Length: 412
Image 1 (cartoon, rainbow, N blue to C red):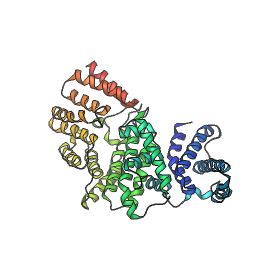
Image 2: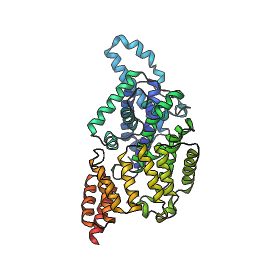
Image 3: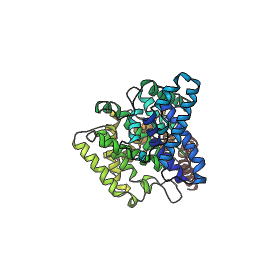
C-alpha cells in the first residue's frame, strides 16, 4: 500500500467510525468493525485499486462486519434474535449512495462523544486520540509520558464507560459543549502536536494528523466563535503550521527554527492566525492556548531569526507558566531566557526539571541541555547530552539531527 493510500485510510478512519457509531450506537463494537474494514482495505486496495467512494466502501464493510457479529451473538442468544433483526434490518447494511453527504460532521460529533463529561478527563483524552486522532496506544502513551500498558487500560475503561453510560451520537447541547470543550481542545492540541512533530517513526511530520486537527479546530470554532481558548488553539495551529514548508530539507532532515528559510512560510496563514490572536485579546480573553498562539505570532512576525522579540516571548512564557503547570512550557521558557540572559541562566532553570518525573527522562530535556551547554562553550558535556537525547528519542529524524550535531561538534 502506498503512503498516499495509508494517509487516506487514516483521514477516513474517524469519519467512518463516526458514521458506524451513529448508525449502530455501540462504540466498542463499531471500533472493532472499523479496524477490520481498514485491514481489509490495506489488503484489497493495492490489488483492486482505491474505490470510487472509499468512505462508503469502508462504511459498508464495517457495517457488514458489525452485522455479522450481531447475528453471531444472536445465534447464541436465540431469545434475542427477533429484537436484533428488528434493530438492524438487512436493507440498512449497505449505506445509501448519499451516505458520505450527511449534514453533520461525524468526526466532530465523535470528538464530543469521546470527551463527554461522564468520562474522566484523562480517559476522554486518551480515547479521543485513539478514535478520532488515529494515534496508536504507544503514541498516546508517549504524549502523556506514561507506560503503554497503563494507557491501554485507560482506553479500555473509557470504551466501557461509553457503552454503559448510553451516550448518544449527537452534538451535545450548548451547556454540555462548554463542559466538554476543555478536554476537546486538549485532544486537538495533542493530535496536532503529534502531526507537527511525530514522536516516532521515519517521518518528522504527519500532515494527515495536523491537517485533521486544524479542520476539527475550525469546526469547533464555528460552534463556539466567542470562546477565546477555541480561537487561541486554532490560531496556534495555523501559526505553527505556517512554518511547515521550511521545517525539513529536501531529504526530510530537520531544519531548526533559526535556520529556516522564512520566505517559505505561509504568509496568508500567518495573517489569519495573527488576526485571531488580536481579536481574542481585544475581547479580554486570556488562556494557555491563546498565550501560546501569541508566542507563535511573535516568532512568525520576525522577518529574520535575529529580529525575534525574545524579551516579549520570555514575558509571555512567564504568564503562561502561572496558568499551566506544564514541564514542556517550563522547558521552552528556559530556552527563551537563555536567548535573553545567556545560556548559563537557561541551564539554571533546567535544574528544577531534573526532579520532575513527567520530563526528567524525556529526550527533549537532554537535547535542550545539550544545546545550551554548546552555546556556553561546554563542548564535552554537550556531546554527552546530545548522545543521551539521541538514544532516548523514538523519532528517526530527531535522532539523525542529534547525531549530526555530535558529528559536527567533534569535527570542530
